[in-house]
Length: 380
Ligand code: NAD
Ligand code: MG
Image (tube, rainbow, N blue to C red):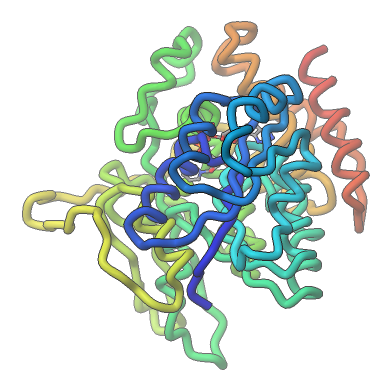
């Protein structure tokens, strides 16, 4: 079902702003906007898009926004419950979730229970609560459409898949980030500034650090397991420095189908909204002859340990993925605050993985409890 009207959660972030750009170009009606505390940005967005509701998680920022928007008739909500209310709005058929971190899980569940189509950028939703989310999506008959570029690529490659065949393999591409080909020794003293210099994509700070540690690829492997019902061992990761091949699938006849394009998130954002249709895009055309050369390498799993921690976590199941995700959120933040070194991130995530208890099935409250446990362990 092609989107007509939507709520955008995390509208002031990198994906949120690019989503609004797509809405401008495609003429979608924006019914709700939410953010953590960015009053100036969300006020500007609210005045342009005239949504019914906006929400800020931070109470003080929300009360400031309420005053600023008092001449507009837009309802201002606060707290995570305000965000969840925006996710359930009657007038929106789609919820685009571009919140960063597992804070996006509760609003995703709210949107599913309200029967909304989900355009999901917030990969941590699936990493922290994949079992809950997929069960609820099935129960409420809701589609989850990937916004993450690799998963959008895989989803696009799967269009036309023979109904009687499972796919053989997913080939998940990774740029390799700013530290490709560096040794552990060379990574010991890298600074936040070095780690924030991504070669191909301009993104929020958390995911940019995740790309430097390659935790991002581990999170994406878990995301792919949930979205495409494959086993972790059916996903191959390959470093592709140019970020032109956004991922590929392999069928039983060893035919490999890939999706290519310039690295611009507005292509996957738009496809999640227009699916199954396609419309013109403001993104430039890809010229393969201008690109000239595409390169591929095996990842260095010994130096970038986070990939295998994530693979082990999803293989074990239960709350292991939630635990490593929360440990990473905390460690990633502490690295950005200058409190720990770059290589400590993977160390901390591994430590939490090793002391996570096994659960067969879990509830939302269990995820919240393991989140608290993981963050406290990393801070200790
Ligand atoms: P960002 O930091 O630029 O923006 C995050 C948004 O979430 C902001 O609007 C912020 O106000 C809001 N937010 C932050 N903390 C919150 C909380 N606790 N509760 C509610 N809202 C909160 O992040 P981003 O780079 O746009 O990434 C968003 C999500 O999309 C992440 O899950 C990321 O992994 C995924 N993603 C991003 C890109 C990209 O190109 N930026 C690509 C693929 C996937
Ligand atoms: Mg990605």
